[in-house]
Length: 182
Image (cartoon, rainbow, N blue to C red):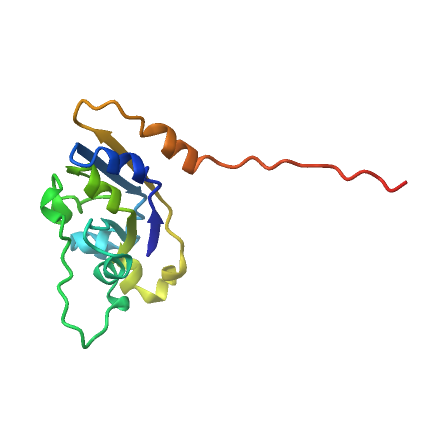
């Protein structure tokens, strides 16, 4: 599981608290087809592996979010509900966006809610690599692309682009040559 911190402009989003915003998440990855005939027997046998994404709910803390998306993080003796509290605010929802190898969905809510949705998780789901252990493919890495966009839906004069750009800007190293000793 990869847990990505989102570079939200929290102060700017909180300043326009009740303004409607839209968050779009798109996850894309390559699926290696099953090299044997058994891949055609079931839609779950064709793909090498699958990926899914989940976004931290506004009311969740980081530990609750990790337990929701990763069963290994859960305590067996704790009876806790692992449902996305913001699940009804998504256009498609987790079930409808899970087909294929490109998953996209949009969440609509207030800017204040979005300010608290600070992480997205990308996690694997089964495929033939999981079941066909003799192939030894379970150690392979899977690459993916994750694109996240943010849109302010109401007519509000605010710059959310610049704070995000400043947070994700790649630092340029400055090389300084040492002067020779005299």
